[in-house]
Length: 142
View 1 (tube, rainbow, N blue to C red):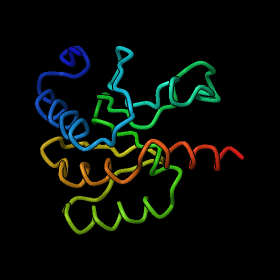
View 2: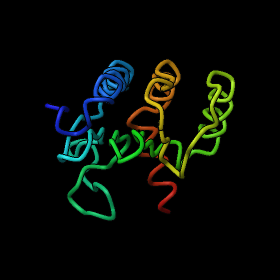
View 3: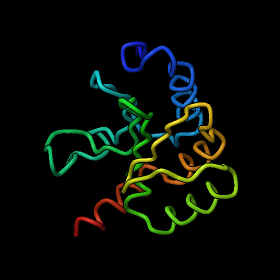
């Protein structure tokens, strides 16, 4: 995948490193895709044929990395759906990073790409398997 079209040159190295960290730590079973706007990690339809309820016949999204105008966004659906995982991440972020966490419901915004806590992102990515994500997704839809 050519990521050079997804992010400006000033953030390219950090963007690539973030993708490499996710690739290294992602549990087996997720699939890496792109749509021309970002890099996405999804549950393939072979594994979860129901797909994403909002867009039927589309793989279930899990993690996305998208370069926005002012930040690199790490979208992690597990954080959005699991309060315990969110609490863990917020606590660990506060311990390891001197800047305030800039986060929405599922989006962690890295405004300064030189301060991305790659080790913490790696740990976060490891914390939810495909089966756990599917179970959580179905439980939250119920």
